[in-house]
Image 1 (tube, helix red, strand yellow):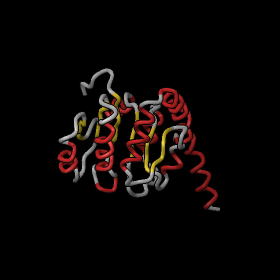
Image 2: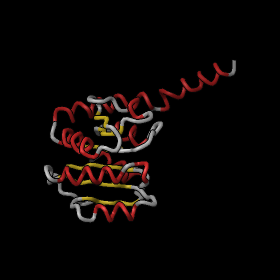
Image 3: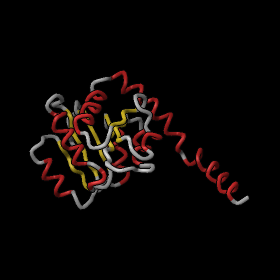
Image 4: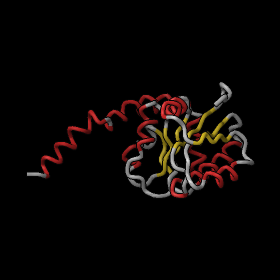
Length: 183
């Protein structure tokens, strides 16, 4: 992506649609840029709102839309991120992209809806925020970008915590549930 080596990288990968709240993330980033000039927002994905989101972001420096990325580049970009954001407006049962970011050791800021609070441990692996509150989202992103101790601890925590969602760990439990249901 040719970002400066000192860039603070905030990423979002997912569908570009209303329910995912990317417009809220862009609004948050606009205010964040006032206090964090070296921040970059990388938005990956496709969706019917892409053109509108690009238009909203046009006046804000350091916003990069990647479009759809090959899987290996998406994961490599996420691994280099300082924070991964999932600002969904509506409940998401179990966003795989959050688990992937956690496995890569990236701190998470995500909406406190659906199954997300079961994935992201607030104040340990990242921060949970109320949906539709750009100011709160910006504040939590800023706090992660500026707290090296928390970032280091969140990275280690997320890498360990994400293992509980691995199929090697969950698979046998799912099989056991199905077997119990058949009795």
